Amino acid sequence: MGFPTVQDKGAGVTEPLRAALWSPPPGLPVPKLEDTIRRYLNAQKPLLNDDQFRKTEELAHQFEKGIGRELHEQLVAQDNQNKHTSYITGPWFDMYLKAREPVVLNFNAFMSFNPDPKSEYNDQLIRATNMTVSAIRFMKTFRAGYLEPEVFHLNPEKSDTEMFKKIIRFVPSSISWFGAYMVNAYPLDMSQYFRLFNSTRVPKLDRDELYTDENAKHLLVLRNGNFYIFDVIDRDGNMLKPSEIQAHLKYILSDNSPAPAFPLGYLSSENRDTWALLRKNLLDNGNEEALQKVDSAVFCLSLDDFSVKDFVHLSHTMLHGDGANRWYDKSFNLIITKDGTAGVNFEHSWGDGVAVLRFQNEVFKDSTKAPAISPQSQPASVDSSRAVQKLDFKLNDALKAGITKAKQKFDARVESLSLNLIQFHDGGKEFLKQKKVSPDAVAQLAFQMAFLRQYNQTVATYESCSTAAFKHGRTETIRPASIHTKKCSEAFVREPSKHSTEELQKLIEECSKYHGRLTKEAAMGQGFDRHLFGLRYLASSKGATLPDFYQDQAYARLNHNIISTSTLISPAVQLGGFGPVVSDGFGVGYQVHDDFVGCNVSSYPTRNGKEFLQCIHKSLEDIFNVLKGKKISS
Image (cartoon, rainbow, N blue to C red):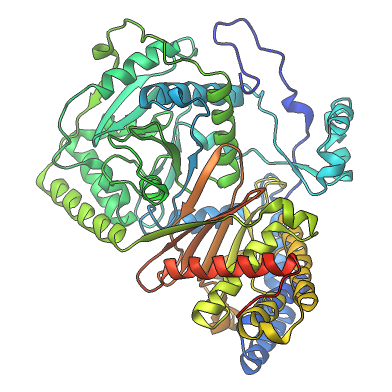
């Protein structure tokens, strides 16, 4: 097995890694208000001219001394009364669940798996069977309490060592947390994981709901827009034999039922209120049992009947697909194409990339190192026609019209989306570490430089950072656009000949140092975005007019994230991406590998993603050349 797991046949447990090794992480801290205001103003500086900044600074200090102070004290008091969770949990769930835009392209993200190193295992049926088995092994391991928390290492050379792991095993769990924190190792919160399985976001008017039924034993499989279910867990709670899962999947793959005239999958791509009303119609029309099966399924396995042509096609397939063969409301869809290319498309309200990445890492490791079946394996001789149930939905004219309209809207949205990518092969993480600069800082600097080159301005930029080192932590924002990146970008783009190579190197180092500080602050719950969001949520809940601070145009502009970025790196993941978060923005998924930098950019017609990537390539070229001591041309 790729991870400690519960034996299926009641033989007890394989020697478990002690999941109880760590006591729970501490609560997410509420930053000091003065720190938040200072950090907020630092983030505004590169985006505003002197007059605008003076006005924003004045509003910020008024807020800090007046209504902001009152709100902050109320937030701290509330937080002290709710130690079982974090101050951001309620507001953050609300932010996602009250959003009425379709989840596809606006919220759902994707990560695609690397191919299986053994090419003959990249067969659709073999890979679907192996990954399904590994996913269920992971689920059983987690539910039995044998999945160790991941650890976030601020100083990996001190804490990510065998010696440290040996020592911490002998520390009582009640104080092991302090031992880990002494060396800046933070066991990550695992509260999101239970929503990975048997979970669905259910559309409701005004605010959706998250639904989980851990007792359900069946898998949902989508193929050609048709819905199938079969049990993957038996009555005793054991997983079906892999050969039986293989037999059922083979049966589904050989079913030649035509695609439905009105594919239900499109409804999950609709505006949430529209979808809520259509769902009520579905329920009233006699589909309650079928919908219950969809909502409670362990997860959704989407089997696509085509092969992947290239990385751009891969991104489109995993980010949105054709709309008919996905159920975007499931906590995740495991997608496997005809040639065995695999990926995960996940709904975002229940959790973040950290939980999904852990799942992908374990499933990849387990399915490649301990595959349940091989190309020589024969499916079990079982009657799949009895075990597999095809779900039929009763549709009236209003539902048919709703599906047709949803498809038209989906097709138009997807049509307007561009996905482009590059791989920069003249250096990566190893070289940057030799030069003692942060690889992430360099990637972010390249985005700032590229936007300045293309559009001649510096704009609000968002980088996602997990706060899972704290109880019920979600994410915090790193604000990569700073006075340092602005100064450095202007030197590189506008006047490279006026600066010596040494001066340009120094500017890169300053950016790296400052970015490192912002990253550590964000990971430790000391950013400013979530704090201001929590205070705003509190102010709104009182029904009074929002404080002037929040009505400042500069505040709105900072939260209109034109460059939205996220990075996740792992041996399991080949590529990741998401849609732009604003209509005139870029969605940037990137990875800094040992010897290359990969970048996947989404955009709508108001922005030119291809040109932006050319500018990123030029920026990376310039940065690496300067770090190598070479002169650059403008």
